[in-house]
Image (cartoon, rainbow, N blue to C red):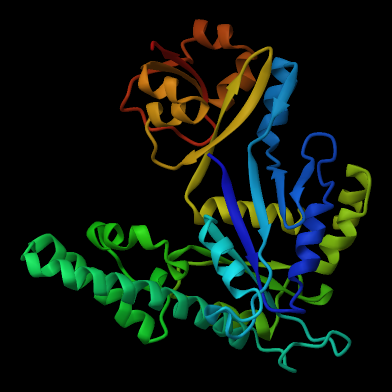
Length: 365
């Protein structure tokens, strides 16, 4: 399944620096290239050390990582909800993403002018929140009007839907994001067609100076406090460091550079892990002589759903799944050896796929 994250933020918070670092990133130059398909859209392959483990054992013709798409969503200014600046384009783009990556300035630097003349990450967050809430409010009110007309038929289901949508309207009027509400299944179904912007999960990227990369600072503390009720991820990144990493050619140079700052991995890696955690995603693998490949699915998916990510026919005609754990594959070195050692499980339609499973599907269409 394709994962798409939209990067948003006010001017001069480091959003463009971070996106450019991603777009130039050579963190895994040979195996994980970044491909720009439009000026503001890029697809980057997800680094996963388990792929290398499998590739070293199987020695396939090719290795295919799973991917994540980053969209640099430009045009947000105060009044975007009313079409100011590139507001309409911004809001249309953000509807299409699975998660929002909200870059917030958490560094002091007199040489980098803030659009409002101050460094206040909480206020910055609230500006974007307000614009998204206003647009959501417009969508919710239009649906309420339609439902109220339809309710004249006396259909009890419509009345229940009205209650769900009205609850969202009340929250938006109070300046709350929809993702902060405890919505049940009926509530979520009532608003699903609206693709509400403030219902989308969010990763806040606290862009800090080099001295704050390990410990954070008062701005990061304030941001974390402000978003504690949103079930959001907060990732501390120094976009300036990421930009320098992106300029390095070799993996050795990149690791040496990270070591100088006492870091074990890049901000990009942290951002990807946060995205997977926030969206409840896991990875399973297929392994053969032609290809070792990673596949992204939702945590909790059954084997037929996981098979459907490869091809819809795999799900429709699912018979069984042959499953090997990576730890067993590392010990026995081949699918055949795992089978002979009793380390290959034969699973049916009710099997819940686990992160890191190596799978082979049997199907008939």
